[in-house]
Length: 445
Ligand code: DLL
Image (cartoon, rainbow, N blue to C red; front, side, top):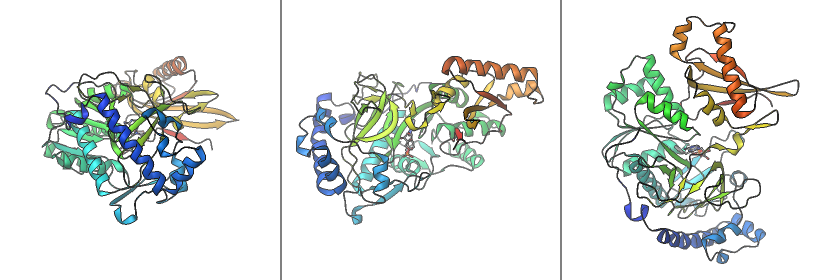
């Protein structure tokens, strides 16, 4: 669904600068950040020394490939402030990951970092087709997660009216969407779906809300999910990407005109794609792991940070006029790959297949169990409201139930090569997301 009115370019001078201007700015900033971390962060001094590199070895952007990677484990091992490059009295804000695997990863921002963050989010809002003075309803969680506050201050910088709704209390959020007339919704795609289906449950007329744009991210989602959201909500659904270690939301944003990849705000974030196995740099157009170096971050700059996200870089000219490199929609996180009886499968590939089947609703969960040393994948997926009405009652021995289950099973087998046990569920029976959806329940360990 395209936005028809002309969209705004927030910072035309830099967003549409020539490639040579962008690259010379990047080189100048890269030299500076390498020197800063070498002098101010003992961790980097040791890391560079071990790799036999010095900041002055960087003569061109291509030389960055000789520098070592930073990983999430490095942040954990140096918990909480070991990778900070400024004294604590210069840190204006802290955020942290949820820390489900032990200590959280902590990130900090100076006042300048917060200004940069608001700037890149303002650029992202403009790229989506939002306009200053729009009402922006922000359903990303407020708190240690960067989604809520990141979008919030960017929207204020953009001079919009922000509704800091955060996640949860969906009925009330729908009432506020109706009463405050938001044109833009910021949420995870799974929470946007939750809102859309709750509106159906409450029999709320789509005409009573004014939404035109969705700014969705923080979790992987497919083109098929986009098509379903756009169809159901009658909005343009655009992809926003980011991660706390690099900044938060607004590292890159899809533009309303191009809708083909997300522009990386390259004056602040230098992107590379590497082979996740060998660490070798890959050329544009090839899929691999995204790696970012921050060019202007003061509190906690990161050098060649391995995101664990799979994407592709594309430097072709975009129809929107922006010259900044685009990354493809993140296909998956490398960590999320499921190995089922030797076959590698990403949850997003299962999502793609499920969402092509008309009789299903876009609510699913993947449950992994081990029976007698064999991995078993159960796909729990809701049937559509219309099918549930047609069936009347729900019985897993019903011929139609068995037929639909077999159809899904054979489509998954054809597309992914795995045999899954299909569990069709009644509408509204799979837990709804209020933030990042939990798609996989792994009971194997
Ligand atoms: O999720 C920041 C964010 C908030 C981005 C709101 C967009 C909107 P973290 O909690 O640190 O930060 O999680 C970062 O989430 O490495 C990706 O795996 C995933 N992710 C973020 N955006 C997208 C996206 C925020 N658009 C991790 N598509 C990243 C796919 C995404 N995955």
